[in-house]
Length: 232
Image 1: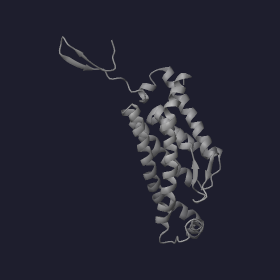
Image 2: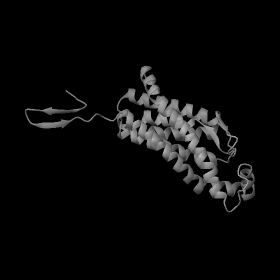
Image 3: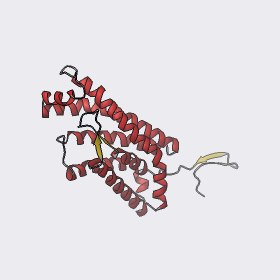
Image 4: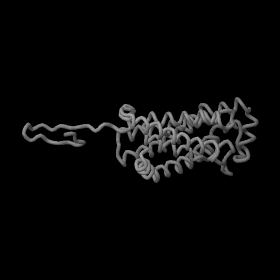
């Protein structure tokens, strides 16, 4: 008889452990036709939701440059990653990126889309990997917390190494300074990088990450229960 916990064979004096297969591993999910269909359905659903919010339901804030727009798209990447595992989270992030290139025109010469893809992956993987190995409520909460931290750190790294240099190369120093001066009048060529990172990127991403990750903590369990109820 299979068991999901420790049990003791008193007669032999042996303690054995039956390891429950991890429901989020890609191998386990693809073992049955039902598991494959559930995986594909969930990935498709959360990719679609994430894309809709990413392409059309986002907005700027009056105290940040217009290239920074608030989106709840990563909320669906976090939840989708928790429900489908690391591979699912990667697929959802990449599908959202590709659909954005097809469905919605870029206003940043695809620099923003590339930045958002890297950040999305940095959000999807900590949550899903943690929950993969610690498949408990505390594991899910820890995973979302790690995604929150990873989001902020990666936003700084990718902007200083990729996004800002690409913006400067594409638009030129004067155009970038002109755009940022409306929000930071003291910005100059010398302090451009520090003001861009610490005045704009850090507070903006901390705010958006807090909202998205906070919502994920609130709605994940309800979403999981709902999907199980309707057989998805």
